[in-house]
Amino acid sequence: MSTHRPVSAGILAALALPIALAVTVSGPVSGVGSARAQDPFNPDCPGRFQYYEATARMAGARVNQDSRSASPRVREAARWLRMGNCLTFSDQLRPMVTLGPEAGAAARMPSGPAIPPIQLHVGIVTSPDDEARAIAFFAGQGVRARSVGAAYLGRRIYIGPFTTAGALDGGAALARAAGFAYPYPSSF
Image 1: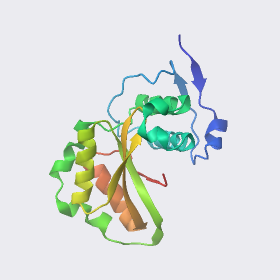
Image 2: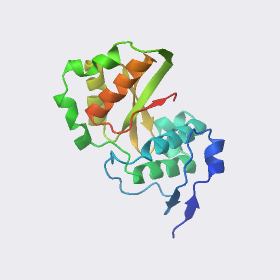
Image 3: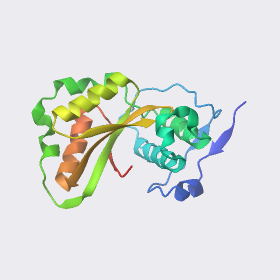
């Protein structure tokens, strides 16, 4: 049996998302679906990440620790993100090993106008090994990194906080060079 649920503008507005999406999610709300590697040319992924973050935030912190406690909305948001080809798999992180410690210089050095402290969400990895590699990579670049559970998906990787526009841009460039296709500023 298949359900057909449009993600309405009213739901997105209620979640206070700074995006307008008109996407239809089809299929059962089982949380099951094949995931493919991130498509670096998919402009919908940052909005999908933001929708997932807002849904998880509304569900509470426990959802980050245990998928079994996640609400159906979180499960559907995870499915939508996964089916949008927005997850980062091991193959996409291969460039990390080719980048020397100088690659993170722009992210470490304050430059440009001051901004309120903000982190970058760089992506969601799907294995503990990729999580450890990403955290170690950013630490080796002199950039603070942390991970947060992502129910039904893996671990979200955040870097920062950044306090200048230049460092924020440098952090995004470093993340893209490392293989994360969709870094974006996040207050999660």
